Image (cartoon, rainbow, N blue to C red; front, side):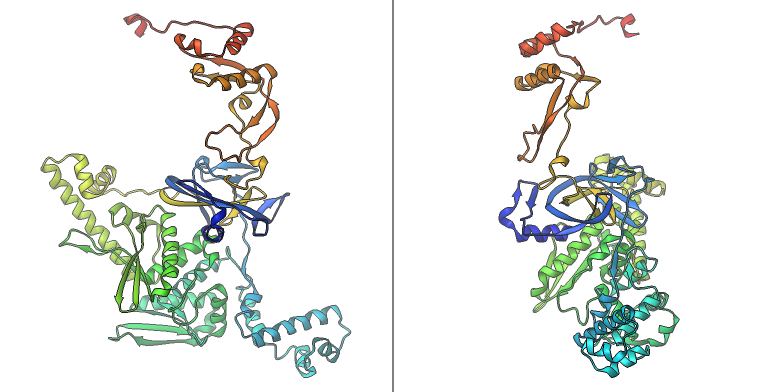
Length: 592
């Protein structure tokens, strides 16, 4: 969602309506963009009307349904059992509405072949269709209709010599990998392997193999096992290994099975050397589990894991870096931004800016720093899996253990020196609750469902007023382009219909508000009208709505003169004014 919003805001900068913390855009009529929503009792494509992003600094809620996960502001609503419920009111056991679609089909695999092979595949499928619809036609007649040689169609007619692209697609279908669905059992393993192709793995430019390079033999073994788990024992014969690296300290394993290669290319794996732009496939973000596995593998390859320095008494650099020539700056920063967004969704703090360093003439390194505060490292360790690198996971564990021991000894030293709690917490960069748990050796609990977030939040408004975000049906949170009926917010006089409306300090209401209150009382009907002073004119006015209520108001005696004469007359004529004492004697009896 964030990519779509950012691209549209960049495309139409002159149409943006914004203030200090908000940017919104109503899409021009010629910009027809559709997403999946729920309308007319069915899941269907719905048109996007507007997009917006705003700065948020505070609590957010992670909502889950199986492997699907979205992070929302507290007031944002999701669809629960026929009604929309705010994220902050969810208990975690509700049944949400989810939807998933195919990520790739046989057509996407065929599209990885040459144009000539694609044409051959299309001709073959056309032959199958014609044969099915016209079983009486001979192969020569069909060949004439297709405009190809009769000999070729004769082979197809005898179920032989199918195009190579078709055979690849059929083998993948037989393995249950096509069509590939985001919620399939194979999705987590698939995402994990795909993650390596953006790190220390990849696809050879000749398309004759997929590989992973690592100094850890256990990582290569796990990688090979994952490939076999997806494609079967038969591909075991296609593995090769070699020693790699300048000092022969590394190893590389690759598999030459062409079905494996084509499958991952169709899913979005970069091909050849990574000295060009790469794009993380958008489908990765549609499922919380596939997202974790993808980034777990990428971080397992590229993470600079934290090390504790006894000399400096702190964790040294903790983060991730991507390299390239200067022309790749925008691309690398965008990839690091996606990683930061993923980490932030679990409440993990990252640096707001990307560091740039020219480490060799013409070669640059862009680095995203991860906060080395112990609570942040512990949160990272709890929620972010590291795949294909036991060594990096061990370094994180060791760094945590050493930091905890250091904080224990330092905290006791500061207490003995008479330092205040505030000083100790600031010096040790940890909250009092966390330090107490460290001293007692207790487990530190982190909530996945509630996180603190500082950054941009994004929203897309559709014609249906809802959208499937990461597979979960959520309402649009309003904004520019929201349909009129979704911008209606009932006021207090409407919500009090057939009940009691209580107003404290009634004299503080502006005179024009008091007049409108009187109208609502007399007519017992009043339109719902946008009255917000912060409104940009996007609110609407409805037909008169029932406002039959009993008014109970309170105020101080000196303020009675500020009440509108007509309103006070109405109260006196149809009700009561009661004066109550505003003080009592301070006696034991009154205290009881």
